[in-house]
Every structure is written in C-alpha cells, then in structure tokens.
Image 1 (cartoon, rainbow over the protein chains, first blue to last red):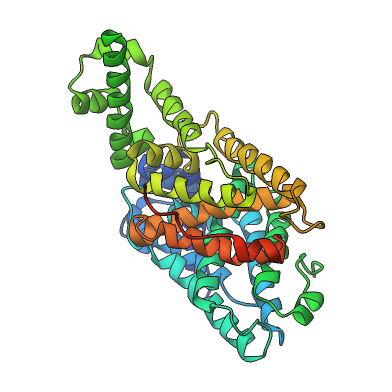
Image 2 (image 1 turned 30 degrees about the vertical axis):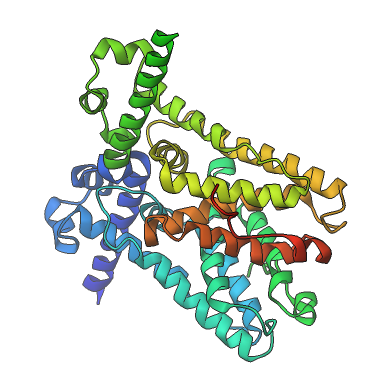
Length: 203
Length: 203
C-alpha cells in the first residue's frame, strides 16, 4: 500500500514536472532529461512509469478526463454551466490540466490522439444537454449536436484568449459571459431566469 | 515599376514559403535556411526583405489585417457576419493567413506581439457592432464589449476545432452555426429574420 502510494506520487510528480517543461519549451523543445532534472528522480523511475516522452504527453492529455466530470445537479443546464466553470477554475490552478489543454490545442510533432480530448468534452456535454432537453429545459427546436459542438469550440477559444490577455485570471468572467450570451438562443425563458452563470461559492 | 513588382513578388513568395515551413515544423523548429530552400532565392534576397526569422513571423501575423476588412453593407450585423465568413473562406485557401493564425494561437519562443491580432479583430468587430447598435439592429440591453470579446474568442475556438476535425473543410458551416446560436441573444427579432448566416454566392 505504502509502495503504491509512493508510486502514484512519483507518477504525479513526473506529470507535473513534464507539464512545466512542456509549458516552457513546448513539446518539441522538451526532452525526458529536462523532465528528470525537475523531478530529481532516477531515469529508471521515470521509465518505470512512462516508456517515452510521447507516453508522458498521452498521460497528460488523458488527465483532462478527470476535469470532465459533471457536478451532480437535478437541473441539467446548471450542471453543464458548472462543469465549464469548474474546468475553468482548475485550468487556473492545475499546471497538469493547462499542459493537457496546450498539447490539445497546438500542432506539434506529437499528434495522436488529436481529436480525442474534444470528443471527451463533446460526449459529456452532449449527454447533459440530452437530459436537459428531456426535462424541458431547452427550446424544442434547438439542434443539440450543433449546440454541443459550438459550446466545446467556443470554450476552447475563450480560454485561449483569456490565457493571452490575463494568464487566465479573467477566465471565470469570460465563461460567465459565454453562457449569458448563449442561453437566450436555446434555453427556455423560465430556465434562463433560474440559472446561475457565475461560480458557486467555494466550499 | 517592374523592379518593384518583382520585389513584392519575392516578398510574398518568402511569406508563402515561411508559412509552409512554420506549418510543418512550428516556429521554433523552422530555420531561415529551410525557408530559403523553399523559395529558391539567395540569402541576400531574403535579408533584403526580412532581417530575421522573427521579422518574417511579424510580417505573417500582420497579414491578418488584410483579411479584417468588413465588406460594405448598410446592415451592419450582415457586414459583421460576412466578415467572419470571408475570413473563414480565406483561412481555407490562404496558407499565409493560416500560418498567421497559428502563430497567434500557439505559445512559441516568438511571443511579440501576442495580443495584437486579437486586438485587431476586436477593434473591427467593435466598430461594426457600435454602428449596428446605433441603427437599432441590436437589443438595447446588449453589452457590446462583452459581445465583441466573446465573438472573437468563439471564432478562434471554432476555427481551431474545424482544423482538427476536418482540416477546416467544415469551417463555413461552423461559423454559420455560431451566428445562428448567438444572434437570438443580442439581435432584434426583426433583424434575425433578415440576416443571412450562410456565405453569399461566390462572385
């Protein structure tokens, strides 16, 4: 058990070190040696967890799925909004998630699995919107596929601009804006008046 | 005159070659030698136009301004929509514009002038929306700054996803989607019924 905990810890420390190195040098400019120097681990310990730089990048990208769990809420549009706000908050705080998003957005020599992270977000949001539609939260003529695709694309661009303008400090306000502007196009008027588009109080 | 035309041609051919090289190797992976090999020009000809790789990147980024001219239209929301559709169409066809957008979106060792291209788009769209509001095309309680910022961010993300999923083949449909979903939140109902969100016929 203690050994497993140690293993998990060093795996996470490799991912965090790799996130920082990729952030500074980009994927192509980074080497496993740079990552090792940051962790203070022996090369063997790194290869125990990851066979290559590409394997580290894949694990980093997969870390996005952890941030794609919808918070429980009877009102499915509220759950959708809260998912994006919580993802935004984690982007502000978690270097591993930031690296994951950057690896998704940029074209580097590492291209597999380039569509997958968008597909994960798309699936999670599509499922939430389908439930919301079933519960009558969405206008009957809304095209759910079109809406889902646009939400994923718009969020991607919004977080990118927030990164450039403010190092993501204004990201939550920008996500709130996105929902305030989008909801009238597809949510029922009764829903719009009930939904909160700002972050819930921190617990 | 003939000499000036030749100069413009070789400047453009350097930008096109650089666009292709940056596209394949990324900014940090590309060298001026790679660019020279593509153009078939002598090194002196390249340095006559551009002092460095960074100078080429700046010129590429500035090429975006050429694609940010609003088509004339009395209806300012139609002009705004057509600007984004035309920008999308040029992204599909023009490798220089594609490289320009990529240099804007990615974090490389080349960071100056990172905010500027977003500012150009923001200024052009803000001016169009201000005119649209004055003409009564926009709902009176719309926040134009918020709207402008979101349109620029959403377009950025939409084009990025279109690139990943279809090499930008579905970009026009995605931009049409964006407007169909956004207009109900800020355009007057009378306007919405008049606006075309699909591309005009090719001339």
